[in-house]
Image 1 (cartoon, rainbow, N blue to C red):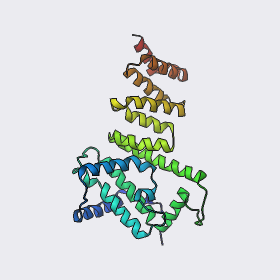
Image 2 (image 1 turned 90 degrees about the horizontal axis):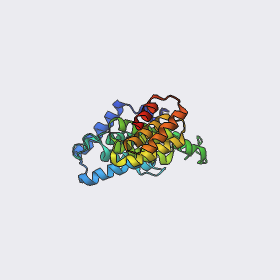
Image 3 (image 1 turned 180 degrees about the horizontal axis):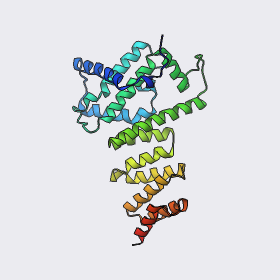
Image 4 (image 1 turned 45 degrees about the vertical axis):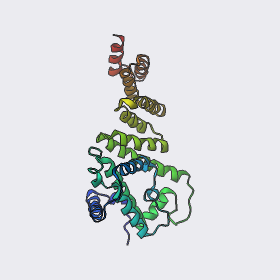
Length: 262
């Protein structure tokens, strides 16, 4: 009898390790035939789109795929994204990207390979009701998008913690297109702010975060500091003053306005 547990609940480090060992064995027996440049391109493309893909799309399957087809599709993508490729692809320091893609592919396999979990997933994404009848997209689709966006956000946080800002940005950009949310834009802005070339985009992301959540004092302060760092004193002063209107006596804003007068 199939377990009703969700694939996410079952996806623990030990299970990931077991799947990983199987894929390593497969790669030793049958190495992947891609030059490094094309392999890196495919990984970057997957990472950029993973937040928008459901399990079927990630594995490139139709909803009526058989169990064997699910397994074969999983093995194919798992072989492509496996973290063991990192040294060959010269991605040292960027291993979190392949690791997350491998976990995401394994989660997709765990979900679609079990009949009970697969049916529950169909309900979750609006493909079927609990009685296998059609359901309207509407709120169920929106709820699924919210769940996917939150998972992507947590993924991006992990990438940012590993200082993989480019990969985090790719995930977050697809996330905010799906579900615009202030905290998502704030993290996007923080990641963009790590590279001088991205700071104009960071400003726009902070502005969007504040538009979505006018009470986001963190974003307003960080936007003001970014303006100041970029030498845009009038805009920095405006944001510091706006922060003081919301939080009278805010120490950082008070100190900054004193500093800008000097």
